Image (cartoon, rainbow, N blue to C red; front, side):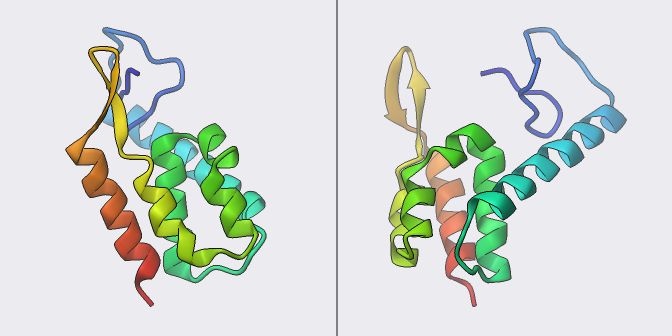
Length: 119
């Protein structure tokens, strides 16, 4: 998947360029979408850090993937303790057509877990 700016993916294709101002505007909109998705999708109480961890996660994997995730379903059933395990499931990407663990995604998921667990 192509990205541009600070992780924007909608309507992106090879060779597309942007200004810093456009990258910032896309980031603001993408974050607003992620925030709205977490606010409307999560039905249980969250700490500020738990909320932030889920917004970062939804931004990274995409709001559609977050909405349909087992993570969200389990969290809404009250299984807070399952969130770290569910986050770690999202550490793979396609390389040469095969699904493989991506160290950078593992690092990202571990950072989200650390934030999730911070009081």
